[in-house]
Image (cartoon, rainbow, N blue to C red; front, side):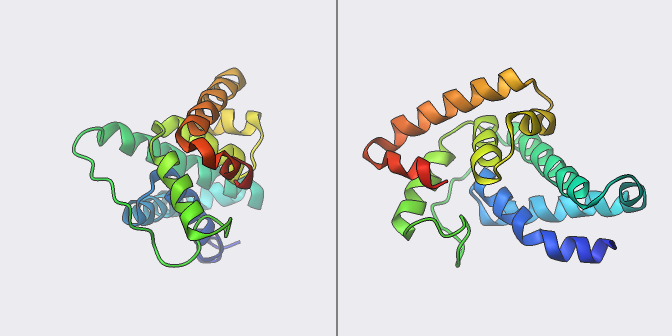
Length: 166
């Protein structure tokens, strides 16, 4: 597989993941572009050592690390926007109001917690897969997941059924 084919077929899904993690349209675009740029720089080596699922996993790992790194650098002075991009971003789960409510709740989670929720329940990765992507133990992923879901339940209140639509 050539880089152009990989980038064109994976960019939309990478954007969806990035948007759910960061909640900002432009930052998500930047994360995807930077992820693909990093992959392009080492594409020859990546392509030789990995099959397509391995390339996808590598892309998600780069995206996740860039997101977490940016979040550490941007802890102050961040401007939160409630504007959503046009079209379906969260995969078409329910109406717009439900998506807005869920995105607002996700936005109130710390970056690592938000990343765990997105990877586990939107991307449907196993605990072990998320642990490998994040560079932590499976126990840490389980603990982050438990705390994140408890916080989401608290934030969503009556709208808790949204958690089952992830």
